[in-house]
Amino acid sequence: MDSIEFALEACDYRNFGQQTAVIPVVNGSPLDEVVRKLFGNMVGQHAGMQTGIRAEEITNFGPGYFMGLSKHRLWRKKSTIGVLACECGLAECWTLETPLVVSSDTVAWPSFFQPSRPRLDYSDLGSFHFEHDQYAEAVTNLEQRL
Image (cartoon, rainbow, N blue to C red; front, side, top):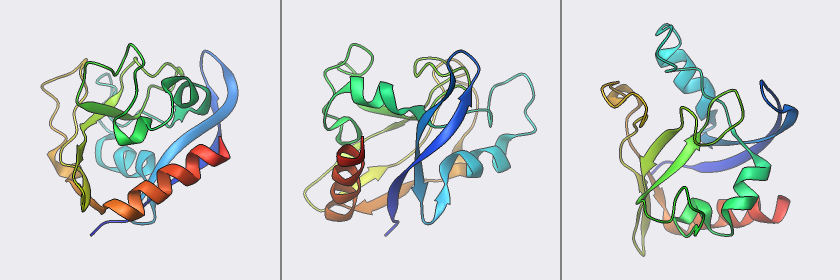
């Protein structure tokens, strides 16, 4: 099983200046760094240019966002969540999304895609499978810190 935590880090967003970002840390590695290493050479495609989602937006998405419970207009009709966003600071801009599959035992991020560039292949990023309790604890911890 994979492990997850959510880091809060200062990020200099193009449209918002310096703000706090929520960055998933999977198996000890910040997801934005992993994506940058895999896709950073795809200039002009925005692959590898994502960073953490602004903490303010995560708060606006409502409690349980990372559990798929958001009622926010961006996510309420989707079975996906955004895990990284554009460096401009808007979650709906160049968002790296994953389907969210929640069962009583596990939470999975089985694949990744970017809605604005549906032909980009993120299969090298892999899939992640977390123990439900560990994932839920990481989400609760994040929400308490926000």
